[in-house]
Amino acid sequence: MKVIIAGGGTGGHVFPGIAVADEFKERGLSRELFFVGTEHGIEAKVVPREGYNIKFLKAEGLVGKSFFKKIKALFTFFLSFLGSRRILKYIKPDIVIGVGGYASVGMVLSAHFKGIPTMILEQNSVPGFANRFLGRFVNAIAATYQESLSFFPKEKTYLTGNPVRKKILKRDEHTAFSVFPLKKGVFTVFVFGGSRGARKINYSMIDALNYLLDLRQNIQILHQTGESDYEKVMGAYRKLDFQGIVVPFIYQMAEAYTVADIVICRAGATTLSEITAIGKPAILIPYPFAAGNHQEYNARKLEDMGAAKMVLDRDLNGEILAKAIRELYNDEKLRREMQRAAAAFGKIDAAEKIVNLAESLVKKE
Image (cartoon, rainbow, N blue to C red):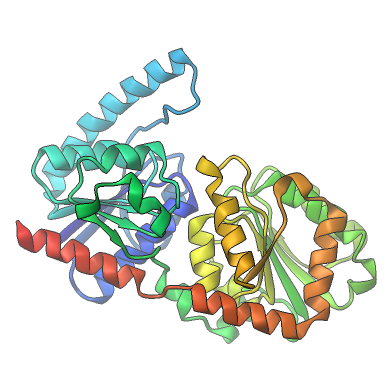
């Protein structure tokens, strides 16, 4: 089977695509596998590091843009559509899988019009514009949440869960502490705001350090800041003499999760799939501008199950964040309960279900 996985822009789209690619590869089902994305998306850096080929298209979003920028985006889409046709002619795939983001639209649509089987992954409870549009054309939709099923045709929508990379599930402590040379046995907080960072989380964490000064010899922090806030955050840790590692971006997420006792993060679908698959206690800070406010919905669901704590972005400050960290630091029983609840919610077979579905679509042709 020749496979194209199209889309990207953020880790929330790219990492499920990599999880699916890994499943194809592990099962020996794909002779050739290509990713298609944009040069300015995270896929441009991440996909080659994972050992997969990637081809690039131009793509821009329409939602929330001015009239003139929408005209420009439509012209870019036309170029993307032509570029997609050239890629399809060159690769001749047996199936095209869209993982979300505007880079998926031209490729999936072009494949549909050429009679190539297509499917999309929907990671969120409220689908974005690109997937709602593509849902009319594709042969199958693989959904993560029950709540998103109503947005798509019932007869071709399947509840699979969100695929998690095998390396996230197969963690190795020795490797993790060699990648991140932190002290074993010291309570470790892993902070990240998504693949590009989150300023509100970064600045609140800097402020939280002032409320945790009495614990600075007892905790250590691994903090992914994003490029723009790296220097400021690094300076704060140095000034207050906190132990830990501050980096703009982390490629080795499996190792980062492994060294962490708790995670502080947004509540994107891919992040939640990962932390629940491995049963990691978390303080969730939903992104307030997510479509349909789905991040708050997802975070609240985990909080209600006892799998996480939630702090709304509008309420977030250093004092509140420090209080949440301190509570989890002091209460090992609570952490164990959150681990069990998170693991009960997690799904580890989503990639397998999605590849089975893809295989069935190809066999139908």
